[in-house]
Figure (cartoon, rainbow, N blue to C red):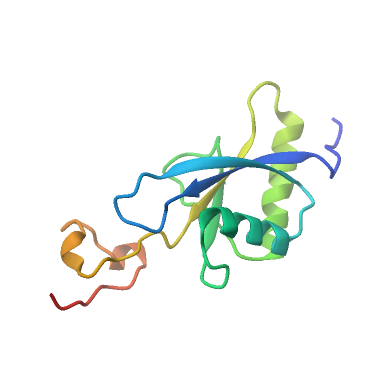
Length: 136
């Protein structure tokens, strides 16, 4: 089996409007090189997502991963290299199906002025998120 050259691009699917509750989340796709640096990748993705890079927490999955599986964390050069290495292997085996690296915003809820806008069944602590204390 032949190795994919490092100059090969991978399709990256980036969600938009992930910071606001109730917003329609859409996705855009970029073609990025497998050997892109973490700083370049992270700044491009954060710019597309309208996120502050110093506050962003990103994760990833591939389009063939199970929907119920949690995203893998993507916060360092090493984690990006692991993602791109897996992407390279998937590209080498792909026949007809496109391989897509799907980005996820791991901090995707922006609270409005009060928790009364949150669904009553939303258990923030179970999702590892801080509880909301607000006064109406």
